[in-house]
Image 1: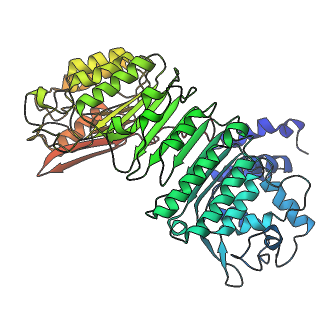
Image 2: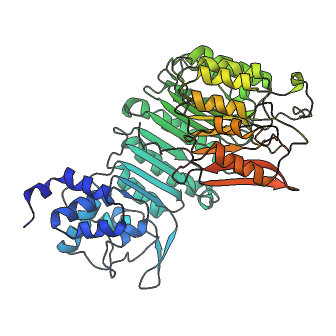
Image 3: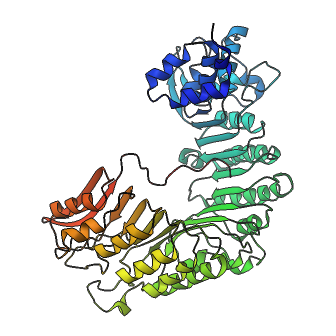
Length: 535
């Protein structure tokens, strides 16, 4: 007999989650039925592979006509019916699934040597005879690279459950088909999503890229019509991700009108444009997070519409574009003037405009594409926790500038301020020295992730300065401009002394002169903890 205390699921779950080794977890599972139930509930919260579902099915059960199902009647044509015991075992696992992630395609072949589409397990499980839904706990669905009507039918079955998070993407093969056939499947998916969106909080629609102008125009019209529907029914919708093949002001305008939208990510295709002036100044009243990405890296003033955002509580801004230093300065000033008290994450990747990069060896900072004065507006955002301004050329920054930055932004956990382009010591030497690393170590007590142009290779720096700048809190460091000239071994030794928590340290050199350095702790992953499926 097992003591009654070991029937408390919360206790068993805590014991299970604290067991460090997989073998210990397996031993825990077989101790009793209660232990088994708790373990299955925990292990089956997330399913990322259709084989996990297929393995629940008896080996002799398959679809009689795989790949040709378009309706519910045909999807129920199995080689044989599942008995009650088999269904009970399947239900025991599937009722715990909260997040399901599948990728369309072929999983292999069954016992008859017939190909198995990734949607096959879902179509078989759709014949579930129970009164309650088989996937009764499902909250988030991700289906990638949709390329068949079989998979879209399975998606519609799951969308009918009323999910909180939906991510759908189309494959390139799907987009290359005849326009009418592709549009028919798109209509089915959008219709199901519009019909069952009462609980929807996060919607991610990635329709890929295509050069078919007819399909692009047809899709724009369908997406525009679809956007007319959520405003009345999707009252909980907070997060929207669109990677449309073609878009214009209609889509952005309708997104701006949606009530309750807090998080918007848009990926524009090459050649897409929209008229910013058409957007009303009352757009995006509740927006907290925005991310804009483009294929063609247009300029900031062409794609960004921050001056049209009426929300006063912006927390995160992410953008990648081409920009001059002056334009970046205006952009930084706009952000600081609107959201200095609320902004926590600011991530800007700037590419150089044609002909904008001067000779970096020029000591005259007035000729540089980005001056320090262009960066100073963001120092007013005192709640900042993540600051990334990554350029294709070094920034005119000194030790005094870094001291001002860390003094103004004491809550930083991530700081990226520098170039993504290798600059050798004979071309450019950064003005920031090891002394700025000492300032960072003594001031930014939360900082874990650092990218900075800094003269680590300066041979005039002594060991005492290196020791004074040591920072064991740093879990990731990267610099594409490390000054010098110094050998690979010298830079490697200094990296280990400056950041003792780094386990993997890499230094790259050319002609025995180091030019790039990076390192990370063994338990550190760039990007930190993954965000939840819903806000």
